[in-house]
Structure formats: structure tokens, C-alpha cells
Amino acid sequence: MSIKYRIAQIEDVPAVYQFAEDKLRVEFPDEMELMMQVWNSRFRKEALEHYLKMGWSFIAYDVNNKIQGFFLGQPFLFFQSHTQTLWIEMITASDFKIEAELAEIAIKLSRDKHLQKVVLPKSVETLHFENAAFKFQKWSDECVWVKTTK
Image (tube, rainbow, N blue to C red; front, side, top):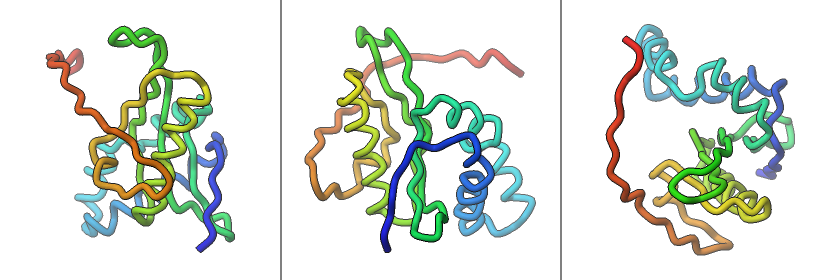
């Protein structure tokens, strides 16, 4: 299967949402359970609209322009002494090879744009990267958080 990658656009929201929901449906076939999972997901429509407008998210698509994976990313400034960090909120794909390629795009994009750090979901550690050996580091800072909504 020939896969291409490009920056996700706001017009991609419906297709990205459908891809993520279809993937989740495999794990949660019951409609009610699926709906509850979607409500708590990282790919809610308002989240997709936010991330895809920013220009730091990528999609993988096949020769039929069908989405095969994506990552949602956004930069943030002045965090833990780094001037610029790329936060990857979510990364998912139809197979592990595409997911690894998406993670590699996030890392290389950050290098090209002179960002000092990329924060990725822990799941990328288990992917097998063909062209590069990345040294993943655990996020060792201890922190606490407070919920500010009910």
C-alpha cells in the first residue's frame, strides 16, 4: 500500500473523525459504550478543529485519498526551560508502520523548525522505526494537577 503524508487541514476534520471513530468501534462495538468513549476521546470534533487549524498535525492517506492515520500536534512555548516544544496529543494509524512514520515526521518536523523537544504518547516507544534510532526519554518530572471544572 502506497502511503503519502501531508499537513492536515480544517477540511479534513470529518474524515479524520470518521477514521478515529471507526478504529474505536472495533474495540467498543456497542453503540452506547462507543458514544461514551468518543465523548472522552482526544479526537472530539472541537479538538480536531483546534489542532487542524494550527498546521502542526499530519495525516497519512492512501492512493484513494482515504485516511490511514494521523497525529494531532501543537507547539507551546517556555516549558521546562525549553523555548519551544511540540506536544503530540494523539497519534494513531491503521498499522504500526504508518504510526511509526507519523511519529518520525513529528520528530523531524520539530528538528527542522528548531523546536527543542517533542512530547509523544508513551505508545510510540513500542514502534519499530526503520530509518532512525530515536532515544526516548521518560518524562521524569513529578507534578500534580488540579481539576478546575466540575
